[in-house]
Length: 411
Ligand SMILES: Cc1cc2nc3c(=O)[nH]c(=O)nc-3n(C[C@H](O)[C@H](O)[C@H](O)COP(=O)(O)OP(=O)(O)OC[C@H]3O[C@@H](n4cnc5c(N)ncnc54)[C@H](O)[C@@H]3O)c2cc1C
Image 1 (cartoon, rainbow, N blue to C red):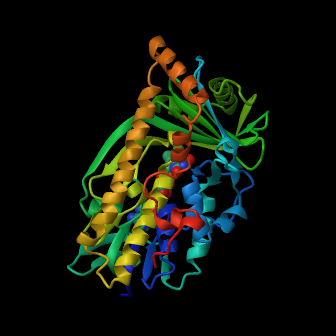
Image 2 (cartoon, rainbow, N blue to C red):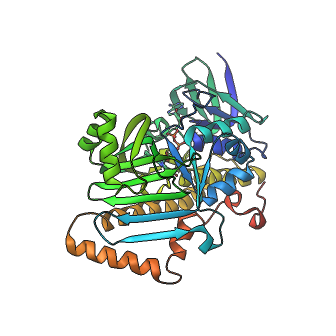
């Protein structure tokens, strides 16, 4: 049996797991990444229906890791404005990058583009062993190490095992971390759509009585990626119905803001659940990304939060390693746990407040919403804190996610 001895074993080589591996590039730590699926290396001409809105903090991080060129050379789109409104109401709010002294408000990137750019970077690291495709079969915790037994028959021992294995985390389950979860009562329908009018670099979101519908601008001026959150039965209808009927329903829900919409490529739907692990770390185990928390995609913050977990954990264990300390001891990982649990909890509460604000069709509530949103839209300075949060520039940022001019090295 082949046995690999590592300092850090990362289970899950998705966007967050690979960000962690890349963030450990400058350390002496031996890293193993175990990923169940090898992503296809070539991109189709039609953008995929799973995309992420990357915040400024994530951009700083990916630039610091030298991953950004790999994203830019594949496919991405920046957006300069955001327009949010409520259907059948006068409630609306706009954000313009120029008003905040920014060139853009963020970037829309296909998830696979992010994963491929990270993979390319990690494959150049001499301290990383990539096992892909590979599955973990069992995990056993010892006093100074954790053993992972893999489907191929190989084994890995590591001082720290990190669960970066997504919402249904195998690591979280095997480590018996309790989980708080609540069904959002929505499924998100995703698709790539062509619109008659160009999007002009504007990310748009309309709040309908059924749930929010976002149009995220892609690099082709007439293509957007949609995230349409609706009750589960409705999501099933939207997936199953003929394309021309779907196109009409979508155009109407979007108040025909960009003219007639035409879905291209496959539609898919994802159940939306809030999850919050009660522990983000224990003796020899830590969680990052969706393994630790999942939130409603209405503010596009899930992977941004996860990437900051990765950078924060890398910062914590790099420092421990430099000080000659055991990187897998819970006592040493508690700072990471407190730090990222607080950030995730704040985001979960913010998503809940957003959802409650737009919940229901009561005319009085609608009037108050309309007045409130208009006030924020026109009051000088009122949008600044909202924008800082959307750019991901609030809270305690890991060093790698700070602008290059304000960064201090940690390893
Ligand atoms: C519809 C929708 C829209 C979204 N939009 C946005 C957005 O605009 N912005 C944003 O920030 N976030 C967004 N999110 C959230 C974002 O997609 C997730 O937060 C992100 O994918 C989490 O990344 P991750 O690497 O933690 O997990 P995942 O992407 O789930 O990756 C986990 C990886 O682990 C692997 N794996 C799992 N189990 C094992 C195992 N046992 N052994 C080996 N490998 C394993 C999987 O193959 C996978 O590659 C959205 C989510 C949804 C549902």
